Amino acid sequence: MTEVSRRSEIVFLYDIKDGNPNGDPLDENKPRVDEETGINLVTDVRLKRTIRDYLNKFRDAEIFVREISDEKGDIQDAKLRARDFLTIKEPLDAFETGKKNIDENILNKCIDTRLFGCTVPIELKVQNKKDKDKDKEKEKTGSITHTGPVQFKIGRSMHKVFMKHFRGTGAFASKEGASQKTFREEDFLPYSLISFYGIINENAAKDTKLSEEDIDLLLDGMWNGTKNLISRSKVGQVPRLLFKVNYKEGNYHIGDLNNLFSLKSDLIDEEIREISQVKIEVHRLIDMLGKNKEKIENAQICSDESITFTYDGEEIDFEKSLMEAGINTEILSM
Image (cartoon, rainbow, N blue to C red; front, side, top):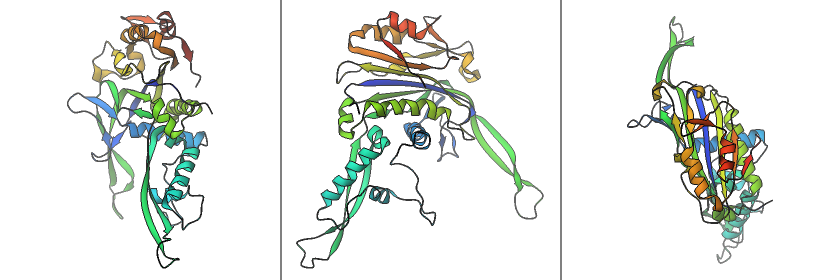
């Protein structure tokens, strides 16, 4: 396994058509929209869930944060989940012995804790040697905390969105003996092109034992996890661009690269309905990377063929333009 020794920034663009990228359970599961700006919001938790589910279901990777039910259908809580990684018998001579055992096993086995960190409450049976009753056991509690090397900001649409309300009939009667069917209501977005920004911190990576191989799986999970999130509300999602900048120096990054991408369209924002109706302007990004090329190791790109890039309004080959600016580029195969 190759240790992560460099800092990286990630920009991920994906779009959704006639769907709900991230419903708010406190607001009738409506798409999250900033009321003042009209911008669609998607939480980092939603993106991490997409990555976790893909890695677990399609890449057979163990993840710590997942729903596990017992024979009665009761969902396992975090303390019980932590016990899944205790490989020494209780009662323990010391609480720290069990804590260290769980910690090492979680980091070694669970890719999501190596990527995103964790806060794990633990409860262990410990035998109190100082107690007169040598067989007396006590439950001791504590927690394990790791700051995640991979952090994402909240995703934001690159344009104002239009929310549509839909009302329809269900397949069943509203109650026994009734002739009228139930009604169902939902809110969705005709279109949203969403931008996520992330950063990989090489310092925190040492703590969670994050490897370059884990990062490869992260990128796979972002791209293919988004494509394979085929549920009723997410079936219209398509990844459009995955862009990663790797730096030569430790403790350095340009920052907020997502703000250097901008959306251009002949339509007003709320009328945009598909990727062919927009272009992504990247002149500020290319200029900024060019100014910092001595500190950049390379840029990695995976882009959908439907996305169009422009430099000062002129359509360009994104990869070629980066190379002309002095940036070594690598095409990611997804």
